Image (cartoon, rainbow, N blue to C red; front, side, top):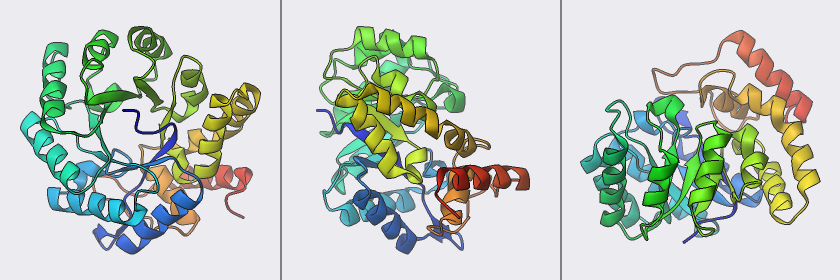
Length: 293
């Protein structure tokens, strides 16, 4: 059931004059695939899914599926704080060809762990494609506890977790509880190698938007036993990763991609353009990494 091993890019959604820019999206997808990315995550947090209406969301995933043409798995964000809406989106995205689903915890409602397990089981029972749990309590206010992950990992349609709590102790506890065929993915770009060290198989990455080849290569180096090279790559990436989170994601990474002339620097409100000091730091780190002149 493992959807992929390596680097999955949490892809941005490019906009132009308030609408999804499909020409730029096609360019991004072709560049990502040709650069060796291992999976594409469409309409997740970095893809500004929370400001896409259902029609835009489904059309964007459908376009992604049709453009990628099964060269790598397409994993669609389908999370909601309303279980019925999450089921609707999960089924709709399965029907248009998504290979798997990324399901963020319900936000704002702040359900109990019991409610969280029931929420995920309801969604998993409604589809026939693999689901990756997504724990990012810093954004949702809800953490998936290790014991809940253990319980959910027994469901045949739940194949892994994107762990973005930033708590390595929690990641280690999850690794203790789940079987080896349950995929652990890093959701924190500065903790990819540490997560791999306890049995992780990859990352769903923001920084992969600008360095897809290096992100994938770092993970595969580790998985093939070249721990030293992977460690050195992780350390070399750290200043760039910090710049990608100098303001709330995806503001910096979209600014970076615009500096690379891959998209327009356009956001859906309430997100807006980065402050000048942030743009200077992003540009500095992009130059230092060799991404722009």
